Image 1 (tube, rainbow, N blue to C red):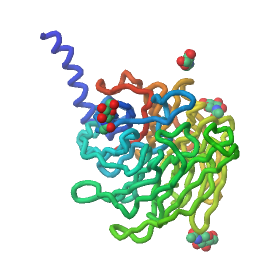
Image 2: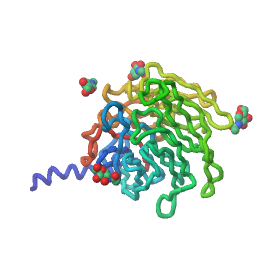
Image 3: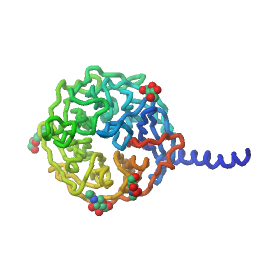
Image 4: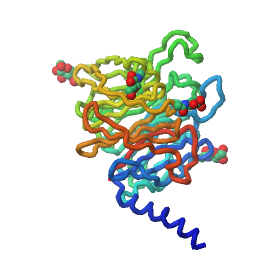
Length: 403
Ligand SMILES: *[C@@H]1O[C@H](CO)[C@@H](O)[C@H](O)[C@H]1NC(C)=O
Ligand SMILES: *[C@@H]1O[C@H](CO)[C@@H](O)[C@H](O)[C@H]1NC(C)=O
Ligand SMILES: *[C@@H]1O[C@H](CO)[C@@H](O)[C@H](O)[C@H]1NC(C)=O
Ligand SMILES: *[C@@H]1O[C@H](CO)[C@@H](O)[C@H](O)[C@H]1NC(C)=O
């Protein structure tokens, strides 16, 4: 009995300093088919992760089918970016198999112990991405299955309130769950100035077995104009469509609003401006295979592109005036890491970057100290996760909260 207690004490003692010294928390979802979990870990003062908790979301995950294989969990199960987001002091995750999203409250004093607040319907099938307006007062959830489109919610006195006037359907010919990843919507993103809601939709190459035409079907960015502000804001009925390749996300430049970078496994990335002065430039990363995720560093203003095929993180500086990009640095992670979602946070003289490695059921932490300078500071392995985490090959999403 006493021996058992002595063994227990260090474990209990470890949690308290981690909580006290945490500067924030990191979140992702397990995407478990028979119960999804949100996994929360503390971010210590030096940027490394420390086990927090894994909490049930009240919903289930799902996965696109890698035909002709069966429906199994795999890295990139939701064929998307931003399946987990932080909005003010809440963290939200989609439940791809339940057509819901779950909202958790974050206690700043203990950010790696999020508490489930409510579960909301997405009014569609296979929800795979969330987007929030800059003021955090509106969130939209994207549906990428048979019933595809999006639904939006406004922050209310007692939770999120559905905005029926903002429901839109795309009418894309997709099954639930989708087969392969081509032709599916990838992400939903508010313009920082609140002028539009952008949805990235992937194209289909001629080689896609579920492309009946045998011709390249280009992807697009669907941009819905927003008029008015606050409770009076309305959304255009129809989008304007900007041709694109296979865009997985839209990352808006923090220093030059209106300039967006899209990771794109067709060539590496593309850069866009929408609206009156629309322009687009295709960027090429030599030797890339599956560049589908990206985040911007507020410190260096570079975009860090994540390639699940080569397992490289590539730093690219995109000139917001010309939309032309320049490669600044690469970092190669392990052969079987299958790196995907990425989140970056600004810490003053440096930034911290977290890259999900679902192949290892792990996270890699980096410190960004200047242009062309980012280095690995931690390999956070599956053995380091909260004990109650149910491991799956479908780990998905990356979001951070700072105290
Ligand atoms: C999740 O999956 C389990 C096991 O298949 C099932 O019993 C449960 O009803 C599902 N829950 C939701 C919310 O879909
Ligand atoms: C479009 O570009 C022109 C020329 O650079 C500029 O004068 C104008 O303000 C821009 N319009 C918008 C809507 O950004
Ligand atoms: C991957 O990164 C390594 C350096 O870590 C670099 O030598 C290699 O060229 C990169 N490959 C690609 C395809 O970016
Ligand atoms: C990667 O996984 C394959 C298949 O499981 C295995 O054969 C190979 O040894 C692994 N490579 C490394 C570097 O771990």
